[in-house]
Structures are given as structure tokens and as C-alpha cells.
Length: 121
Ligand SMILES: [Mg+2]
Image (cartoon, rainbow, N blue to C red):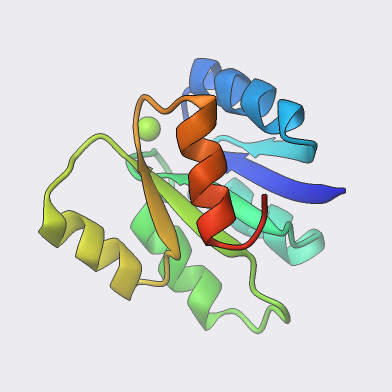
């Protein structure tokens, strides 16, 4: 079974994402900010990280930079979630190491297609 770490400071969004991912046969774990997510990745790297952008403690961009600088073997794929559709914003995330992005709010079909793009659905 594939594993996905859902990183979002909103408990509601984590719950929605978990539900969708479980219907896509993922084993899901959750983190409420980038720091928690980084600790989780160091302890047990998931196949893919679904990453929120705006979070307290450590935001999505800082998480990506930290993940890139870490010596983690087999870096997880990262799909970042954004409410902003500016190309500059998306480009910055891709440059920081994200593999794909998904607009919030996302549905099952959209998320599945993004996971297929990164080779995981
Ligand atoms: Mg947020």
C-alpha cells in the first residue's frame, strides 16, 4: 500500500484529504505544520506528501527547503495545495522542490489525476 502524509493546519482539510486518499487505497498519516511533517519524514518517509502552503510554525516553502537539504534517501514526491493560482507562486513552489500542485478545494478526481502525474495512483 502507498503512503501519504497530509500536511495542513486545518483539521477539516486533513480529514477531507484523508477520506479521499483512503478511497484511493493510500495509508494516510497527518501533520499540522511543516516541522511536524519534517519529523515524520525523517522517522518514516512516505511515498508522497500532500502539502499545504500557509501554516504556522513552518510553512510549505520552508518545509520544501528543509526536505531538500535533508539527507533523506528516496525523497517523497510532493504535491502542494494552493488557493492562489498565480504562476509566480506555483513556479516558486516547483523550484523549491514540489513535483505537482493542486488547487483548493480539490475533489477526488483532481487529486487522483495529480497523484497519477507524479506516478502514485
Ligand atoms: Mg493552511
